[in-house]
Amino acid sequence: MTVTELEDYGMLRMNVEDIEKTLERKSIGVLGVPTDSAPLLRPLGFWYDGESALYFVYVLGADSRKVTASDHADVARFLIYDVETTFNWRSVLLTGTIERVPDDERRAIEEQIDTSWTPDVFERAAETEATALYRFRIDDRVGIKQLELPPELRTEFSTSGPD
Image 1 (tube, rainbow, N blue to C red):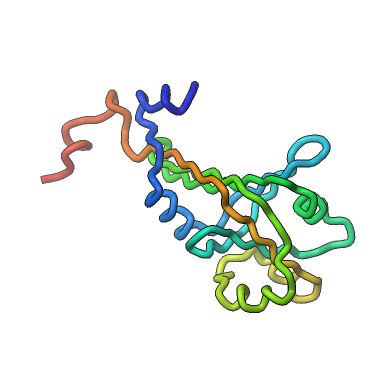
Image 2: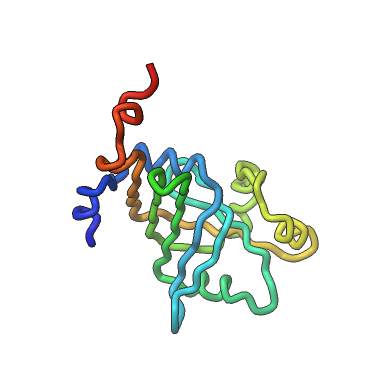
């Protein structure tokens, strides 16, 4: 089914403000970059600059598929989603380009980045291993959401709230 067809069942398209709020409130998503075979998908923590880019810190390794795919990608996608219940969820899909941030820009950007939520294993690895900062430049953003019960499950109490 298309998004338009699903609107009859309670799904809504997110407006620009909804998408911005999601980007500002969330810090985890899934990066998708093309490869010669299936796309490479990786869950990543991110920092949104409030305008047009996300930033990711990669822990470098001798043979990182994520680094190789990111360095060769002409286009990439990033998915942020939040599911509270089966009737309350949102999903934002970003399309853009990904690039390694040059060293001369890195320090100024890293001073702004909030890394308060980073999986422990990556935080420990970053203490002793080389890292790189990557920028995902957002070219397109779309979002969908459902934030209420479908009509057939609503009751007078659920739509009007308690007195």
